[in-house]
Length: 117
Image 1 (spheres, helix red, strand yellow):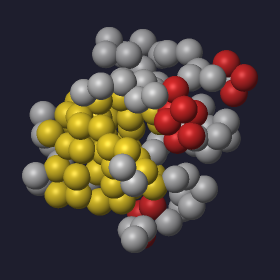
Image 2: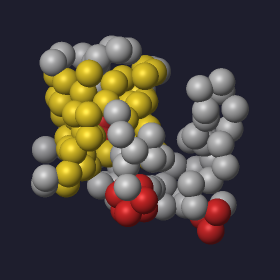
Image 3: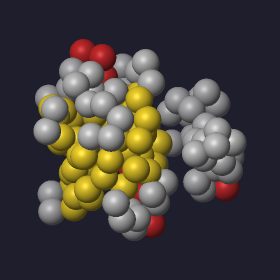
């Protein structure tokens, strides 16, 4: 079930993020092999262990690495497969230039797929 705050993002596939403090179905805002970004689930905090259920039978454990006003980043315990990254990567105009991925030092990363730059 989509929450009202995610209704404006109908073109993005939803995943289920589950942690001890709560869970929800959220769209994938950005994904790389080692981390994903989602709209923030208010009950989850930095350091919380979570499971990201991408598809039936495909889930990866992780930890909430960063929480912002409206977004959270989950560092995955094992890398997502290239096929999973490709499937859940937002299209080139899904969010505009304001959602550029950054490394742990805040430096912008190149596009996940150079054809989408």
